[in-house]
Image 1 (cartoon, one colour):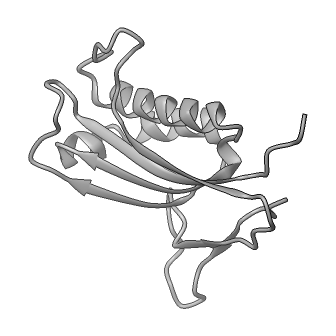
Image 2: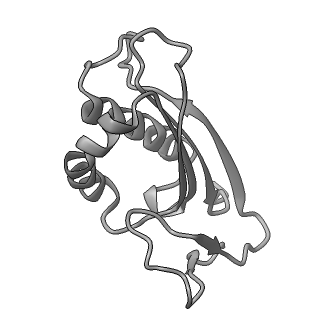
Amino acid sequence: MAETPKVVTPSHFPKPRGYANGYVQNVTEGARILHISGQIAWDSDARIVSSDFAVQFLQSLDNLIAVVREAGGGTEHIVKLLAFVTDLEAYRAATNAIGEGWRARLGKTYPAMSLVKVAGLLEPGALVEIEGIAILPPVSPR
């Protein structure tokens, strides 16, 4: 089984807020790496759930977590996220709501993470897209 990832922060770096600089994990035989495609804030009918930035961010995160769970993992297995946002000021204005929603979903787990401003996303009305990597435990034999 894969051991729990350990956060890596060089001692001379400032303390990260809302992300980890890196993770290291010893992976044993049978552990699996899940690459998660970019998830946007749509529902099961492929409709964007809201025009509110924080709502979209958290729905995108929920959709990503659903992929991890479907693959047999949990939020503790997410080691890397990359968020694409169309509006940095909207992101900054929503950080309190995003932080509260984050903690409700992931506790104080903060994977290695990057956030990039983009000119636009493929789906009309999408303000956020989040992709990720998770290291999952081996599948138990049935």
